[in-house]
Length: 501
Image (cartoon, rainbow, N blue to C red; front, top):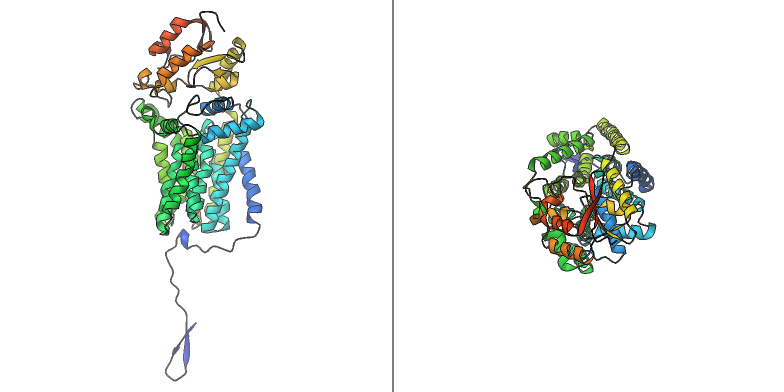
């Protein structure tokens, strides 16, 4: 209360204090005092939800060729292979190392260990998002963010959502980068950005919102952020092969990233996966859209996070479903922000809708057939019967999991025909062929075939654009040294003409 003089000396009257009322926004919401035992109650809930949403991942030996590729790489590394030397891929080293470590503990005959790690990764991501939301908007917002993220995290084709993929292990680091930046821990934020990049290159996109938060803070933390981001990447390069690291993770994928060839095919895939994720986010998108029209969210960093993640999905013009996983953390936080200024019934509706959508996707994951897996298992059984454990074999196709299922060593460091023809990425147009291979790959491949010729060659192209008749070097190799020995499920088997092996 204020007092002000009236007519006479010492006479006063009360005047209420004026309070400024800012426009209603998320940032203006008064947060209650944090509750005791908050994490003791929330973490078991998130852990149970993470486990339930990942149940389908344990229902099959593997979900997609990426898991098969990583499993084969891990075995090769455990047997003395050198990453970016005798073991190659267009990906950074963190996830292959993770697979190798999991296999060292539990054996390489099953992906159960890495599936458990994927559950842990999803739990960590949810907990970090919950912590971010709680710091900004209160205890209830923290619970909302963590739960909504896990419910939506399965909202893609099961082979994309349930696989222990690069993106799943990238997401905790992207969330950690934002968590550290929100607390102005710039060196740690830079390190988290680096590890996100080392899981998958597009994880580095989180640097955009992190840098924006640094700029908004007006702190002299740019050097700390840069040091944190550079040192882990430099260490990874030195632990492998520096030139090979740069080539395979940055400079050697020009043809793969090109938009030319199969434009309609990849655009259709992109639209399909966008629609699928939109269905999964049916409970989240309406609150975000509504709040955009009626209030400020005060969440510029989250919009930048979403925008940079969308740019990462577009990068390379392939639009695989697992690329879209990168969008889910910022969408979950934006929905949480929006729900803070809407009536409570909107929150209930968003959660119930997300539960229903999650149930739908879990049923899809448990019931959907996997014809590709059945085909790979048949080939693997045949390979195991026709070769000895120490034999080297070559599978000319795009299913590296066949090596892992058969427990046979690949005859080449190039685990798919895609690296030698650019078919990887789903291209089936004019940019598929020997001349579009990874630079320098064919001379190395010819040397491998000459020094250690495979006992068995499996042509699994099945009339695809990379079939041997369209690849002169492979056609000549088969004609000179091998003879046809049968057909299994459409794949042609070749054995050495000299009868060795």
